[in-house]
Length: 188
Image 1 (cartoon, rainbow, N blue to C red):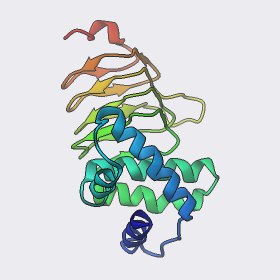
Image 2 (cartoon, rainbow, N blue to C red):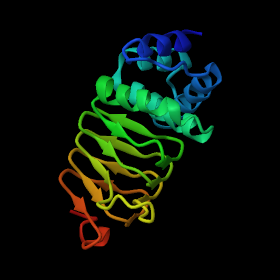
Image 3 (cartoon, helix red, strand yellow):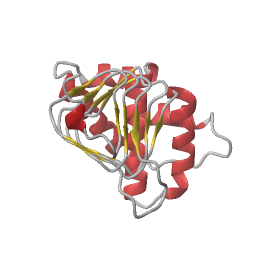
């Protein structure tokens, strides 16, 4: 399968790579195809696979899904190399312990950070330079909760354990934190 060969190729960029089970790669591919088809239902499987191999938008989604699967199966030894590949190949940082439902899509993901312990609904789309996360790094602090079909446009930030409701476009340079809830900014 082409995607397994591609992952092997990517791992050559990693110092002392650890092989990733083919079943993990195949599962990540299937989820990534569902993610992309959520927004672009007419794209065919082969085209999406091609984009994973030559486009950092789909590659970032695929690497996130692969890391999330490795975490699910308690293969934490595989995570550092995937985290590094996300930064090196896609210029973004996506933590694998954030749960993102079907329909995740990244547009020009350079500089995008989705921190740890967030919960994100279906159809989430994020553009370049966005940050989703929290300030404190304690295991007790939960991250953000984002509803279904939310789009974060360039340079938006959501910081703190707050809720962003579903179905909204949150535009450039909006900054949500625990002091200012989404209701104050929602229609700007």
